[in-house]
Image 1 (cartoon, rainbow, N blue to C red):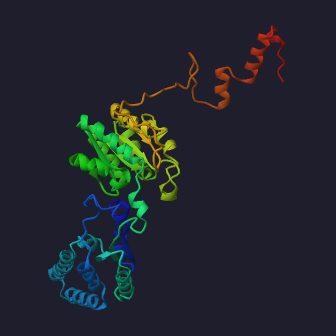
Image 2 (cartoon, rainbow, N blue to C red; image 1 turned 30 degrees about the horizontal axis):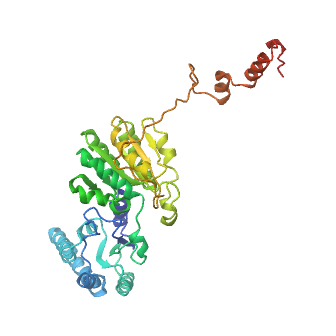
Image 3 (cartoon, one colour; image 1 turned 90 degrees about the vertical axis):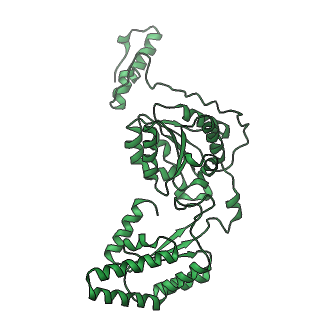
Length: 380
């Protein structure tokens, strides 16, 4: 809920005063930027669950609505002060920053332990039965992958990326890392442990992550922006205008490239080659194994005159011998022109004719090789 569209929707719901129930699933992998390495810092326990039940109760809501109606009749500053006392008091009780949602027009309940089904059912039933109109936000805290231990222990290719980036950062203090609330998914939580002042979690805000990286690049730093391939689509406008058009040396580490299987269709990075390779200043790289991935991190660090990106898939490495030092991978460039000739824009027929590759040219060449004059060529 750190991206702009979420606030646009909440602002609209609050303005319409619609009977809407919003559930904020605050899990430990995709977390708020203030979260710790091990998950959100939000306190969840018996006390907060009990308070949430009270906030969701009909008696509490009726009392609150009665107080609001009285202060409305009095009017003036009394009503404004009473409203502030109500929301700030509940904000202090829950220690969750509920006043933010109250300002947007949503009645806040939480935080609630999302793994306590009994409490969740009770709260949902009470909220559904609320007679008073208006949108309600229920803040539940969960741990992603809690019921599937193998998901919590899986080591993926991002580990090699993180290891290579740490090696580069040890010898270059200008290297910094940015991620959008995906420190665990991108491997940058290891980088953060090693360099806590050089790793930035901007929350689930890919657009800001890209522009933030661009700003750091203008100040001479070497930003590595690690974002899942499909998630980077949300920040593509910023990639084009704030990075590539300015020719800023931002390095994009695009994890989950290609078909990712268990992560689901929303995580499949099937379009990054098309949307990155079409940019005029972008260097696009794709490693064939984990060793080449580590070399490409060094290559990206060395590219300091334009943006670059490297894409790598989900899953474990193939067991390639890892390099003791990242030396970088040479970039091989091949010009798409004929020797001493330029192929300008035009129709395919025009380009073939200009290149001397039309059927007439080929036939004439064959006849000349056979020793026959060009006049013998019959055009049909």
